[in-house]
Amino acid sequence: MTETKVVAEIVNLRQARKRRARQEKAAKAAENRRAFGRSKAERTSDEAEREKLQSTLDGQKLEGDEE
Image (cartoon, rainbow, N blue to C red):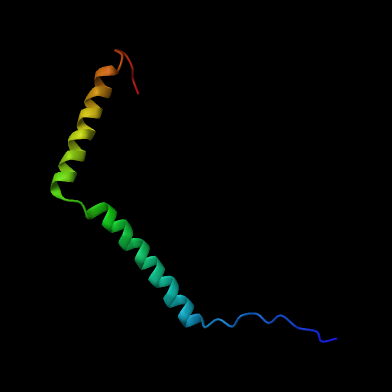
């Protein structure tokens, strides 16, 4: 009978570090695209919606609520 030994995969640490850095850079780029990649019209629309929701919420508060 022939026994087969499992050998661990050889990993080049330099390549692994570069791969991890590329993945982190890609994740950061995606985050920045989400945060900064919108048109001015989209940003103003979202800001107006936030202000409207805040004013509606402020109008619903009861007198004497201290939070």
